Each structure stands twice: as C-alpha cells, then as structure tokens.
Picture 1 (cartoon, rainbow over the protein chains, first blue to last red):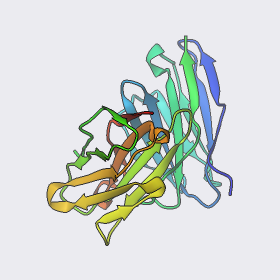
Picture 2 (cartoon, rainbow over the protein chains, first blue to last red; picture 1 turned 180 degrees about the vertical axis):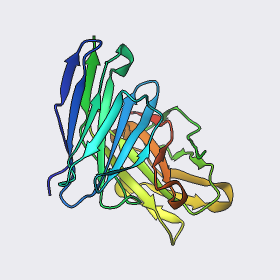
Picture 3 (cartoon, rainbow over the protein chains, first blue to last red; picture 1 turned 135 degrees about the horizontal axis):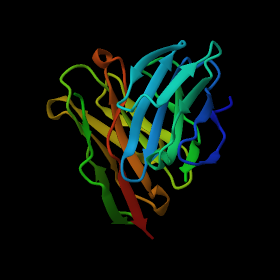
Length: 112
Length: 114
C-alpha cells in the first residue's frame, strides 16, 4: 500500500507570494491533517479535513487555508507569504478521526 | 484547553541504559494516547498507541508505555537503548469531546552515545 505522498518536496518562494501544497492520503483514508513543524515550535496543528469537511482548525491566521477533494486528496494554500512561514509542512492521513495518523515526508518551504 | 507536556526536551544516554520519557496530559475524560518517533531524515511514525484495555502497551522496537489514568500520564520506556534509538519522540492525545483533534507534546530529542 502506498504511503502518504506530498508534493512538492521542496519549495522556495519570496515574501508576498502564495503557495499551494498537495497531499495524497493512503488509499481508503478519509481524514487528512496538516501540521507546521519548526525547530523552535515543534508540531503545530493547522487543520483537519474529514470527508471534504473541515472538522478542526488550529490557531493560524486566515492566510492559511485548505480543502479536501472527493477522492480525499487535500491541498493547503498560504497567501501573502512571510519569512516566518518557512517550515516543514506535514500532511497526515487516517482512516477515521480517532485513529493513528500516517505521515508524509513533508514539504520544506523556504520564504526569502 | 487540553495540553500535553513532555518534561524533558533533550535526553542523552549511553547505549544499554534504560529510558523513560515522561508525558502528561490535561484532560479528565476518555482519551486515546500515542507515541510517535521521528528518526533523523525520516517521516514521523507511530511507536505505540493506547485506546482501551491493558494500560501497559507494547510497541515497535522494544518500546512500551504505561497509561496511568490517576496521574494523567503515558510514559514511554525501553529497558536498554541502542544507538539507533537516536530520534525525536512525540507524545500525542486525542479525545471525542474535542472532536478528536490530536494535541501534541513539544517533543523530546533523544541522543544515544555509542
């Protein structure tokens, strides 16, 4: 069974630009969560989607948004990028909301 | 609001030493508990989980954890660590009452000296 895939793996953007990250969950998984990982802050929860509905949202500004498609694939978008948005963005999928999450390799975003 | 505390941010041990990493959570209801590990350059992966039943849970690579409800704790243990256990370890908790949002601890970086 293929694992969680994330594209692109690396991205370099400049301040003010926007970016879209993609996540393909494990086949059959309906829940997709997104996290921001930085050395100083650890894992910060962004949002979770279940069957195309946003079920939970973390404490990030409205510049961070996401969506989930009918095939469970998910995208997250960050508009008006700031230097502080540089981080590893992780996607995780699970069968149901309460279940263990399986993580992708992440997208390393660098904002210059 | 729920929170998860991992008391040690950095731990350095010699090979063959015993390991215990602390995890405490603040929530009085029914919880699901997880330990994840991130080896250098690798994905986060599940070490073990507790949903119900026997509070002593065994995971991969010789790790185990004990759920003590009265202490709101889920400490991770391994009797004899190896150099390959060098990694960052995360404790996480979710609960039905909070829509199963997974709450994460800050992580513990474990370095094993050969």
